[in-house]
Length: 403
Image (tube, rainbow, N blue to C red):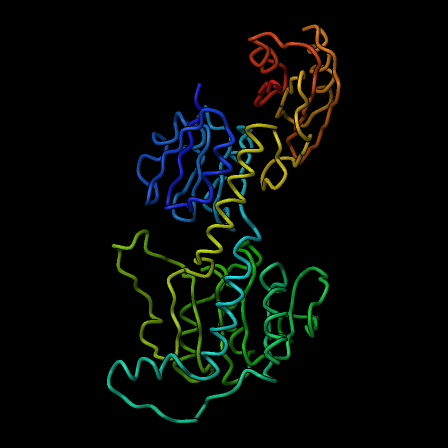
């Protein structure tokens, strides 16, 4: 029986080689997002690969009874109902590191452009205006760069900015190891007050939603610049427009928005279009050939390892388990189950009743879920997966057979 994979939104061809490790794989590629009728599109698929515009809600996931795993070929996973996927025993994988360099480079380039006031001068030339002036133009060297969120992108950016001679400060809710000449500050307010350029690199959560509001912007230095290349709901756009209009902020660079077009054919609308001193880009922070190739290979390799070996390392919604390669002459029983006392005992009792000898066993739990990989010696009967799947507490059971 073939394994059917649906790859949407022009996922890079670098995904094909890892997926081709799966015997009898059938890859269906789509250039656009799947929006209407998504449940029907994935009803008989074992794997689906998406980017940011295809949304998988609980209804869609619930209707995909054959779905084994979901690959988000990007950093974010907000477009997937992670709890619904976990409840069905479907791991979700992403690529948290693959586009780090691309986003960091664009952010640093945007900081230089804003400090030199390039956006309004470029637009002026498009209108036939020769805005040759030194007024408000500054070098990046010795300016204070404030990074909100010192994760993969924030720390990479700090190294690049340090090399340019900037003084780097960062704020994070967790203690992080500083890179380059970066220094941590104790509060967000402190960071906002000392930075010439403030840049956001945090996920979208209840804590970060709208974190840069009118009050936060008021705390920024007069003439400072704001960069948001992270998530569209972090910044109050109306408050930003007011600060740009009053001159409190000298410029902004925005790559993500609260409401984004669903396709190239849809028009983009934003009050930020009224300002010449704003550098607008269409959610392309990670859109480089290098990043997309890396993402394609990374996520596809995780999907392939899950199908072939049951590895869930790198999953964002189920227990992470790496039982290693399946040895020749063995079979592997993969059991996603409710995390409650007694399941492993029931599993081993049934395995023994099937005349199989346990050669190795791995178990990890995460919240309400447990995931066990049991390598056995002996040949499981053809209906072993069905029998094991009827165990009390079982969510999803697979049996892999070695070469």
